[in-house]
Length: 510
Image 1 (cartoon, rainbow, N blue to C red):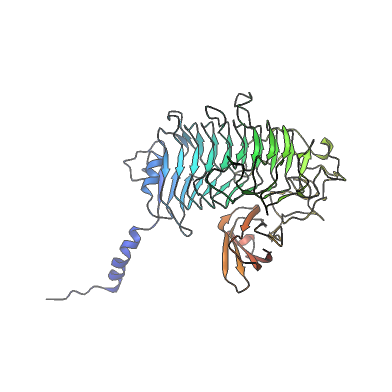
Image 2: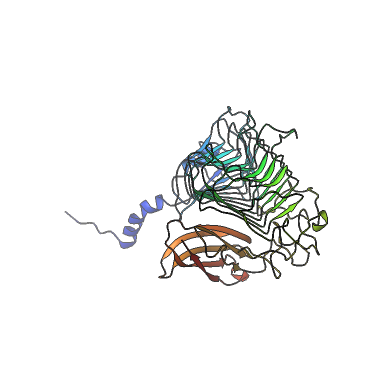
């Protein structure tokens, strides 16, 4: 038989053909498309569900054009990517898709994300028959989305879901038929650990702004940073609801015995019908740093003892009006209700709430307002205790805002430079907060190593925009000792600076 020669270039092409077939790609969805189309920019799909089901290769991006997408069935996201190849469900740049569940039956969710390693960005989810979105997968990022007028919680994380991040999202006017279940955001019931909410707003939901009630989970940790909750416990009409009406309900359980460990930093609660910051009956550790409360039914409410070995730590927090219930066993420092402070309206640039529901910045950031920012000359300025959060001046300010744009220290939304703060508390057991600052959009790596140089945690591995961040390290499975936390940040635009790196020592004491 005559042997046929195959050239090396042809052989390489043949070997690479299967890999090329599995290469991640982009699909497009448009209200003017057709699900029989190939999903290209020129011939897009019609439905988001078609785009999601077609994306079978991790790393694939689904771009959804602006316009209205009526749905009668839940959009199920079941496939999982991985840390190196995240699925992306993104609004097309400069456009905003509205997922409209007006025709849905009661009890059907808008989105159900059981898959992991997804990044969803830029969607409005309206009038779903249950949750606007339920997340039961892990390691997902939900960014710059809004969930409103749904018939249960706007965005709920549960069923062992862990390490999900909700960033710069809004949730409002959600109300279930009984008015006692619909929260703005929730990490509750059987939720896993390591979920976080950053830069989120929740207002006028029939139950709570944020709910951490547990049923089936125990000893989990959630982080809330730079979030606003207001006017919860009211219906869209403005009438009081039959719900609980709390801003941040940090935990609780049926038998009053479960532990939800919550780190709350730089958060703002005002005008909630019942409580601003609410322990409910949580028995876990709660850390509140640089928070502000005003004109809630009760500003701070922590009336119950904790489980053995757990602690309540409250530092640098502010209350305009009576603080409420902060027990004697709480570890406190430089809170506005402690001597020598006497807080009045004159301590703030403004108590006018105009603009709190206003549009976000182009990157999804919260609007920058004078509301509840400290006035120059207030004795709350530079009066705090360093707790690991970034600050300017000789000491932190009290409350959730460090400065005001064009005031003494410049714009807090544009940090002066890269920095990695010392973790707080330090020494710690079993969790600690680590803060860092980015002046520009950058590739960010935040990892923890033991003294032999072995990697023990990856806290952040993502591209992030400018701003201040806070992450929680939970070290239940690590032995006592000294660890190193290393931040490496590489600006995406080389002209904006060189790579930055910094290291801090963390001490875990059992």
